[in-house]
Length: 251
Picture 1: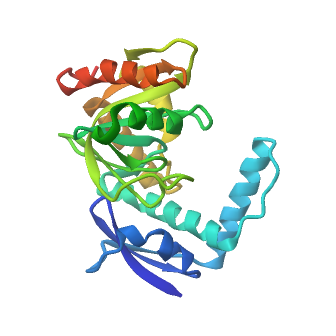
Picture 2: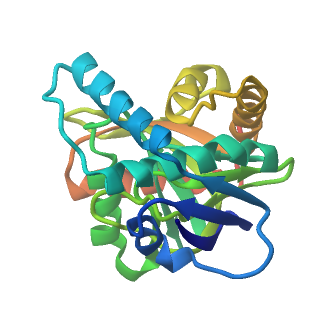
């Protein structure tokens, strides 16, 4: 077994794995001290990830890929972490988080819509004012006062992200359109998307906690719907529309 301790969303996590690759993947988050919780991977966890991958491929009418066990173990680790995090008021969310002058924005959309491309446009348009927090699976900690987005090792195929955090001010659902426009969403309008994009634990108690946390998140960030193309103007319109969330109350 290979072991290591990593800090994510202010929690120390002990990881025991069958392969060393997991620890290389998480090296930027390595820490020491007494862990808040631990995860341990066995062969059954890796086999379960292979079955999930095959099931998703069939559902999407795609070719079933024979992923290496080391990669499948990485998935198993992040899944076990995500299962435990709601106990610490934290959820794993599928989206791209960036910080602009210290203000956090989260973009989320169905796979293939272009959230990573849109985040790249922000970096091109606003330059050094933008810090990429996480481009795929940030951890989101929700309190009564604020919502904080944290970087994780699980930051997309391009490995874009930082081991840092930002207070989240705006959450934006993206959809493709020839014309760029942005408008606020109500919690009721956004809720189905929030449920879909959050990691939903298999443990029923943790699932209930996740739903409660999603509800709190929707109260504490301003929600938007951005219809956009993949041109730099989309980033400018998105920022112009969302910068008002620094003072506006969430609907």
